[in-house]
Image 1 (spheres, rainbow, N blue to C red):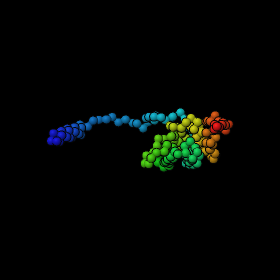
Image 2 (cartoon, rainbow, N blue to C red; image 1 turned 180 degrees about the horizontal axis):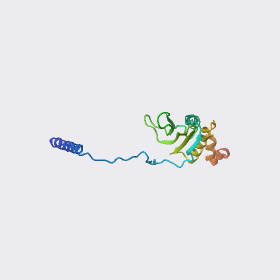
Image 3 (cartoon, helix red, strand yellow; image 1 turned 45 degrees about the vertical axis):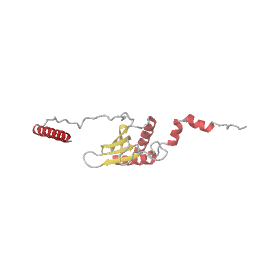
Image 4 (cartoon, rainbow, N blue to C red; image 1 turned 180 degrees about the vertical axis):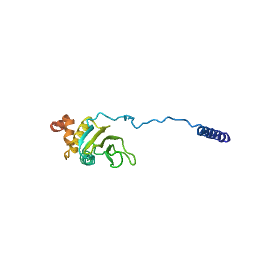
Length: 189
């Protein structure tokens, strides 16, 4: 026991000595401007069909239409994202105005699940908005449908994808077999 206390004391002393040596002779680290460095996120599909599209309209109004549409169409029971979580933020004042919508897979509180996709909006001019969709986990068909819906909402339309019809398109054999397949029960003798 005495030996372990001596070892711990020696290690603590060595660490303290190294810390004081570093404080007297600080290491110089060159300054690097990383504000323009863009690092691609793992799993992010940056080739989305809605990538930096410029549309007419105030970004707050467009942001509101998209958020409302997503909540009423995509984040309801029976839709592919029915159990997903919605997070949004709007930075309306300051030097950089922008709004973001994040859709995450469900998780246990207090953590968020992995991001499924996000929509980013920022003013391009006084009356135009740049809109970008970052897809991380949407299937190609769901990305096509959500992109179509977002474009419609940006123009003020109030329609959305019919998720029941989309499911039937995905599995026509399965749906057809449910309608026409007859099962004969065995006859007991």
